[in-house]
Image 1 (cartoon, rainbow, N blue to C red):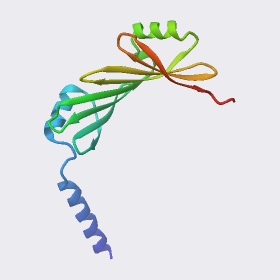
Image 2: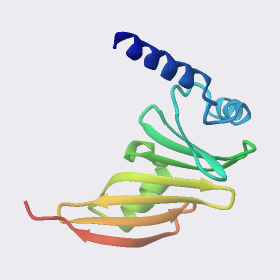
Image 3: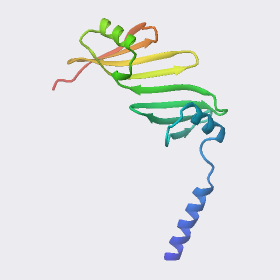
Image 4: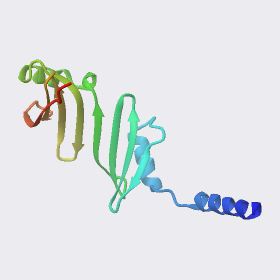
Length: 146
């Protein structure tokens, strides 16, 4: 019985040792040069692209690459301290009394968008903005009473 278990363990180890990496070397090289210093990104393979999930400091990131290694888009998630002073000032003027709970920054070849989640004691407000500060409320929710 022990021999069978040992053979199974060796076979499984050999299978995983020879398994092809989920991402091409070309994509990995471009990723490393685009995002230097990132350790242990989590890769996901889709039909027409690869997606890497990783952290850089307090920022959570996703980067999408086509199969040739071209960066298609990035999504970054962060808090108030990473928001540009210009956008902070625009938000404060347009939404007084609300604080920034979180930000999702979406950047692709054709656009850069910021999706802010603002809060006060009673509501959550979702605001979409471009880099110039053109803003619109996309959703608003009442907080549950505590």
